[in-house]
Structures are given as structure tokens and as C-alpha cells.
Amino acid sequence: MFVGNYFLIAVGNLVNLVLTAYMWIIIARAVLSWVNPDPFNPIVRFLYRITEPVLRPVRQRLPTYQMGLDLSPMVVLLGVYFLQQFLVPVIYRIASAIG
Image (cartoon, rainbow, N blue to C red; front, side, top):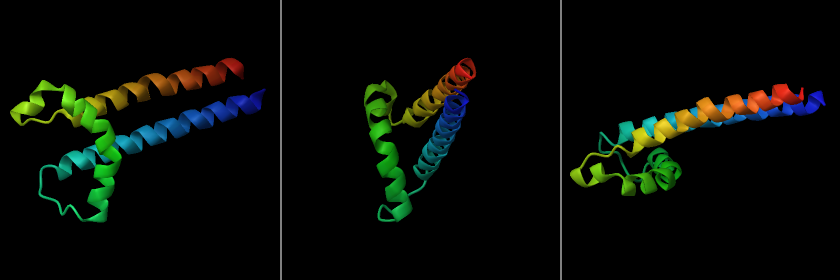
């Protein structure tokens, strides 16, 4: 039964790593929005392609976007932080319960 315990711990670590990486990608995207990046740069295209599916629905629902203030990266960062603080400990707790 301890193999399942180690597997869930590895899943928890992986989820934590992916969420942390996505937080940094969102931060990079927000910093890029302050400057005028080259839209044909592969890094800029990657950042837009990986963040836009998450930011677009949030941006459409926020009333501040019509005023020219885009708070969608902050809302998404708070959501990712919540997942990191809630989901990862739950996975670890399940791993300790079965181990």
C-alpha cells in the first residue's frame, strides 16, 4: 500500500510545481503587457498562447476591463494560489491517510 502513498506524494509535488510555473508565466505575461513586445517573438507568442485561454474568460467577466485596467492576471494568480494552498495539502493528506 505504500506505493500508492509515494505515488500521491509525487502527484502532489508535480501539481505544486506546475502551479508554481504557471504563476511565473502569468507574472511574465503581466510584465510584458507593460512594454510593447514584438508579437512575432516566439517567447511572447508562447506566453500569450498558454495564458490567453485562462485570462480571456476572467477578463470578460471583470467590469474593470472596460475602464482600461486589466486585473485578470491578479485574479488568476489568486486562483492559482488558492489551488496551491488547498489542493496540494489535500493530496498530501490523502497520501498520509492511505500510507
